[in-house]
Image: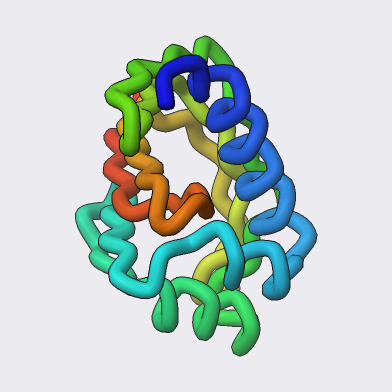
Length: 123
């Protein structure tokens, strides 16, 4: 299964674009049902609560742009590290910031899904 690094970097870029475009269909495919999403604020989300917050308007991502992304291909898992510039409207307040992230994708029955996100705010 080696050689998935570039494919997963691109899949994660698509996931970030889907968040900014509120593309729930793409997010539903790419995010694992058992997702653990740790925001830079230390708030935890599941797949359901993350998508739910976006659908309700409580959290509206307007831009999520990755940079300096590096992949470690472990076969049936790929670990991504990098930086993301995020613009979000959360609880009615607009905010823009950069984070350093670690992101894990797992190959489940031939389908790659994001299982973990952890980010730390920069600056």
